[in-house]
Image 1 (cartoon, one colour):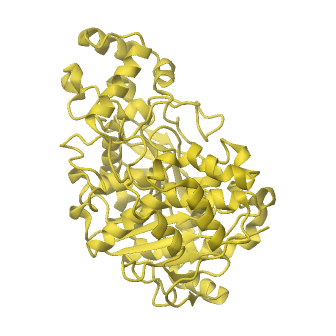
Image 2 (cartoon, rainbow, N blue to C red; image 1 turned 135 degrees about the vertical axis):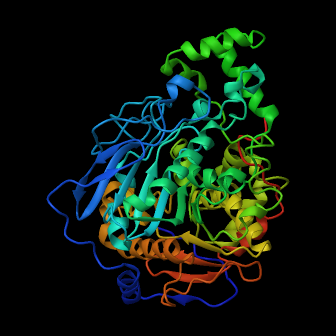
Image 3 (tube, helix red, strand yellow; image 1 turned 135 degrees about the horizontal axis):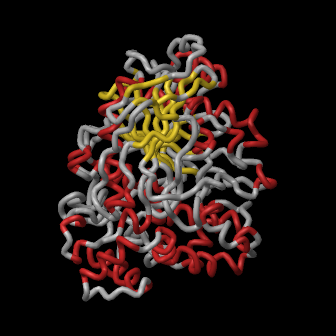
Length: 539
């Protein structure tokens, strides 16, 4: 199968051998935790004690509530978890946030408004003060959960002697519905209730990290797609300052936030769908309190979701016109996979895998017209055919749609960080999954099983564990080093330069990890003049 090569690039290539990757893993990992005792691990938290279980030498605690049931205070500020007596069992996932389709990735798990929970993996709930890695899931701001084997943190915890935390939070209208116009004090400042959930979760981590064997002064947020977008948003939120100390985003940026005008139009549509009269605020408030969870979730389906620039909690666009100045000193890694749109667009429109040359430009117009600006789709296709003469029509479609749509926001964020001289590193995943005969290339979400090391949990890596393991180890070791030191390099063994506007050097994770100056530079330059607005933020 054809594989698009890199266009000619400036600079030198730096290679990391397989032996180097293995050495890196040994160097990055601290001494293994002691053999787990027979007794189940137990931790005393502010709200009460929890009992987990040992698995592969790692203490695992699942479904810990960091917030109270949100059903009792819909759309309002989250409250800390209510206290309990006795020892709470923490050996099974809790409910996922309400969403459509119900349950999202967590097939068979119930959805409920009592969803403010997190999961912890630690080599030991002791006094070791290990780096803490907090993961936020994708699914835009509308769906998803961390209650899935893909996000099991035991391998990362054991490999790097770190504490891993994964978080659930309110989504879609439950977390991002603008109800301030109703005049109820409960909703004041709660346009972004889902972001307030994340603030509460991060405060929980600060309060409890040391009891779980972690260091509250070394908290790294990492997240993919919508999880990365939530991290970018937190970087621009004054209330989040000091709650985390590094950021690692994976195919997920939030350049612009949603305008109040757009947010309130969404509210009007939702209320109309529910048969509620916005001119009768008292009735609306009462109805929203009484309606079944499933009825609300159905009414929110199909609506754009994004954090709202409210002038207070989120006082500005996250990365527009520049990176948030208050987070300039925060170390940050930004990543992207080579063919994001094979799964983002190709799943919804399988015809994009069998295009002929006459169909490429219309497909670009159909799927990414908003990202092309004044560029002519036919001229884009001609450029790609010149750069990559052996490419198939589908190769060109997925490469161009990724460059215009998904890669563009990451480049903007990285460039704006570099313009501030903030400590920034960039990576790309160019390894192609052999799944389904290689049709997916390097798809959106491919970096999740690689970074967590859960290769058996993803269809993209399940049948290529031996081939993917070296890449996964290199990525995990870089993340662990970043969490430990604020720099993905490890004693010089992995040479990963900071990203700068002069050379745009990035780590390319493929069969052999290597640094390249300005990967796919010709494509970057083609789309650079096109203005970018985050989807769903302007109606």
